[in-house]
Amino acid sequence: MKILLLFLILAMLSPLLSQDNAMPENAHHARSGFKNPYPGYKEQGLKELMKWLIWDRLIKNEKSNEADSVVFELAKNDPAWLQKNQNKFSITWVGHASLLIQIEGLNILTDPVWSNTVSPVSFIGPPRLTQPGIALDSLPPIDVVVISHDHYDHLDVETLKALGNEPLYLIPLGIGSFLEDLDITNYQELDWWDEITFNGIRFVCTPTQHFSGRTMFDRNRTLWCSWAIIGNNSRLYFTGDTGYFPGFKEIGERFGPFDVAAIPIGAYKPRWFMAPVHVDPIEAVDVYLDVKARYFVPIHWGTFQLSDEPITDPPKVLMKEVSFRKLDEKLFKVLKHGETFIVPHLEQNLKKIKNWVE
Ligand SMILES: [Zn+2]
Image (cartoon, rainbow, N blue to C red; front, side, top):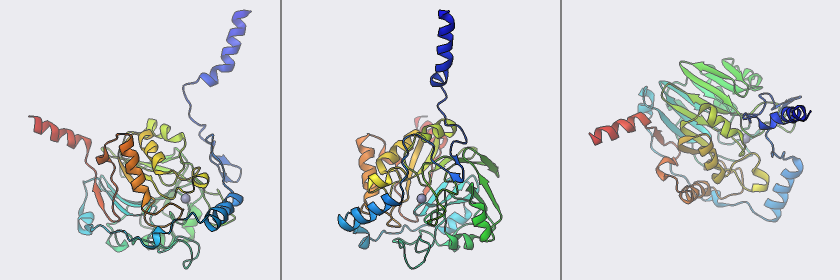
């Protein structure tokens, strides 16, 4: 009898004892859209938005005005080299979350935004403070565009119209009809953990903790995601927009280690409002460690003033944290707008060391 009871208790506890802590794969699907399924997430509604805009900004005057006087220097890049490059793994920061990634012969854009404002109306909304690091017409032919979610600073009508139907658009669930309205039909919608292989490169749609919507009436109707881009010898993780959540460890387990992770470091203040959906530079280091990346390329800063921290703060806070944790500063590539980072392959480094030793 005692043994039977013991078996019964063990059977009841076994789900808790399971080694597999992964979230059920469709836990983010909601009745009319999507939700953040990981424990600890706090939804911010209109009440909290009003509290931020009226209490923090108007009454306490907590928004930094630094952006009014700051000018970021553009790096001089080499469009002719980018046009020719077929075999170097390179990353060029256009600005905000827009990157040109060259990986094993493929030219990829992430969240391409070349417009001067990021809002429903062109004459209001956060203006672009730093011009795109490379002109749209200087880009090499784009093979793939990956989109993380539908917010204006990530999904830009004018830029998509200019890019047209030639590239393959990889998008999270629900964004397809938006592209079709722009006459873009060359797309593939993916759910979290879905993947597609294009010209030998795997693109995996991976979770983030964020939200979506372009108006007052379409909140969370379309999905948000990050992307693991995996070639034969090169691996990159593009985080999109996200709060810190336990899913990064799972992404690291399943697809890491990555050569590079592009991780947001800006738009994080006030923390009480932003933390569920935007990491700060300190949490960004946790993301980097969780996904097991070698190089860290910061994104989502220095281009549009979306939040209350001074616009030059994110990389300073990041590098302070890097030094506090005694990480190797050389692996944290704070790029200028337009700067190209050629990612050294680990094997190349090993070869160099081997040659040097011999
Ligand atoms: Zn967003």
